[in-house]
Image (tube, rainbow, N blue to C red; front, side):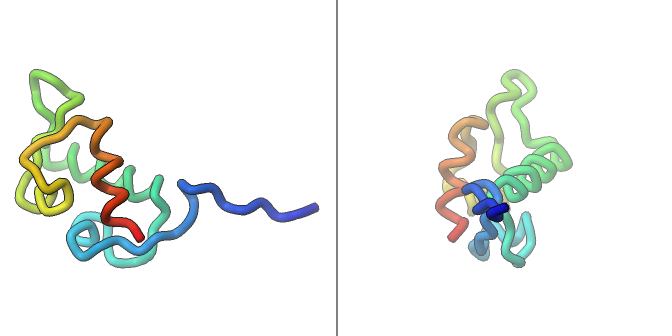
Length: 84
């Protein structure tokens, strides 16, 4: 039986210094990075209370997003720029 090649969400990638401040510096799968960023967002109460789809960035998250806020759908685009 052939071993399966990991998909894009499972392949370990190296986070940038900005993203490493949230998820850690070790290589991490994209899916796990998204999970840890969501844990950070919820722990720091960064979801907009009126629109839970919008994320209001604190100083650490702003270095990853490059802006003050974004939607949960845009978040993956910004995270991809910090995973190589």
